[in-house]
Amino acid sequence: MAMEGYWRFLALLGSALLVGFLSVIFTLVWVLHYREGLGWDGSALEFNWHPVLVVTGFVFIQGIAIIVYRLPWTWKCSKFLMKCIHAGLNAVAAILAIIALVAAFENHNVNNIPNMYSLHSWVGLIAVIWYLLQLLSGFFIFLLPWAPLSLRAFLMPIHVYSGLVIFGTVIATALMGVTEKLIFSLRNPAYSTFPPEGVFVNTLGLLILVFGALIFWIVTRPQWKRPKEPNSTILQPDGGTEQGARGSMPAYSGNNMDKSDSELNNEVAARKRNLALDEAGQRSTM
Image (cartoon, rainbow, N blue to C red; front, side, top):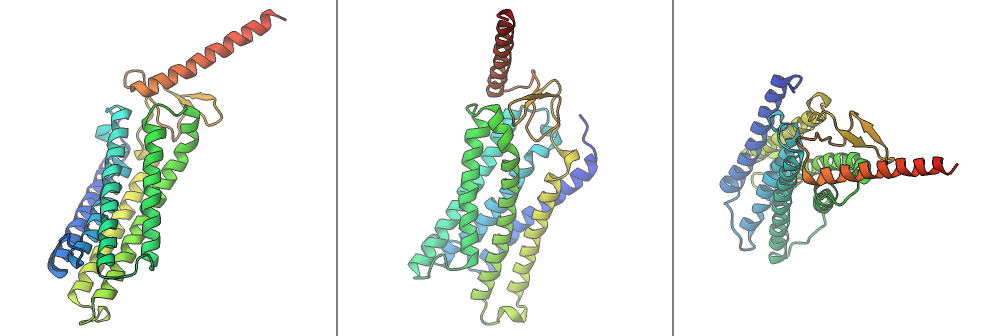
């Protein structure tokens, strides 16, 4: 199935990848050139891992994970494979975010710097915890075949909305973090005098902001959504089914259906047959 506005999508996707990659490069240049490099000894060199890992994992990789379903050349892949890729990218981003937190806390503890006193730290910790909960709930509800289809249908809009809110929160937290770091670090010359490092990191902040805006635009265009596969049945939140409906729940065809969703659909079919037999039995006793 051809994507509507395919070349426009490619232009925006290429722009997002370029801006995201530049954000990572700018972060590395910042810590390697202006902040004396990287290390793991409790010093400022260890803290420098914090912005590198946050921008690389929590911003760039998470952004790619959000739009992975929108890539048209993956539409012929099984939905289960795409779920695994989506979950894998988010897991990598979560691991990098946790390491980034460890680097910040260890640096603070070694140098007797108070923890969790700034708005940046509050919002950042909330974002990480929320992200981990989102990852675990997605794994157990949408990746594994245990959850009933009615629960998946009910939670899918919440899952999508929550993911976008988390991503937006991460962007805001990153911008607060780089600004806070510049204010504390730039003394002579002061941040207010437009030193080269300040201008460079402000540019990094703009790159992060533009990357987030591009990801939001791509993922919110309905014409670029992964198409529903033909002859599929979508279970509605009230437990009923809708043939050929368009919705936020992923749809599956018989040829491309993964094993877990096939079993769930067989369960729905069995329930419908049992209901029909019950109705027939009631009519026979009347």
